[in-house]
Amino acid sequence: DTEVTQTPKHLVMGMTNKKSLKCEQHMGHRAMYWYKQKAKKPPELMFVYSYEKLSINESVPSRFSPECPNSSLLNLHLHALQPEDSALYLCASSPTGGSSEKLFFGSGTQLSVL
Amino acid sequence: ELKVEQNPLFLSMQEGKNYTIYCNYSTTSDRLYWYRQDPGKSLESLFVLLSNGAVKQEGRLMASLDTKARLSTLHITAAVHDLSATYFCAVVRGGYGQNFVFGPGTRLSVLP
Image (cartoon, rainbow over all chains, first blue to last red; front, side, top):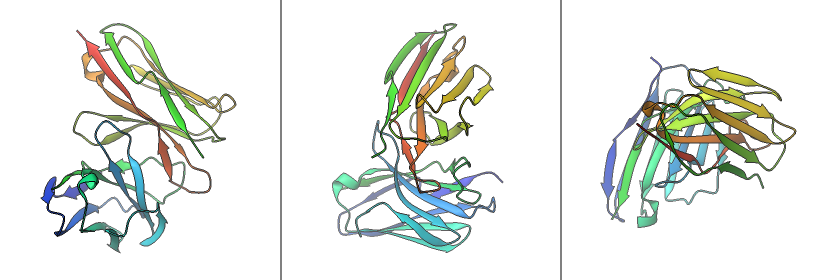
């Protein structure tokens, strides 16, 4: 299994809602990532988990809350989002987080905040 | 601050032609990555270049890295329509294992 699976594929939420994005991989990778990608822009790193510990937080607002319950699973909890948070949210994984490794990306969750 | 630039940002070419996409970055790095993204889809890793002078080829695509010039190229040979996509280069920000900074992307359209 060489896939990173993200659910849901599409999400529409109001600014007062609470929702969660889910990411799963069964490749035995120990590093997992959340990226945000606005339309026609490059992906921007949000968070990195290495061996289930948060290792990078790129000054992301607290309305985004990551969670890594185990080495296969990564969640992104959303609360009180703003319309400008609408974007494609991509999850990725790599074997150990070393800088010579390529990232395996999921297909993303397209989020719309109304 | 690490900056990654790509040139051109948009490229329309005919099938069968050759072309090169350029990626420049602003600080020292010996690791550079190329990714492909189809419209509305996720990113697919194409090449990982890990040293000065590294060259990798797959099919009609060949990537190279010159760390002294802080330049990578992605050369397309005899383009086909299936290569139409956005191509991103990415460089690792110093001190962080996988803190990529992506270039703005080159949107390639191969016309029949």
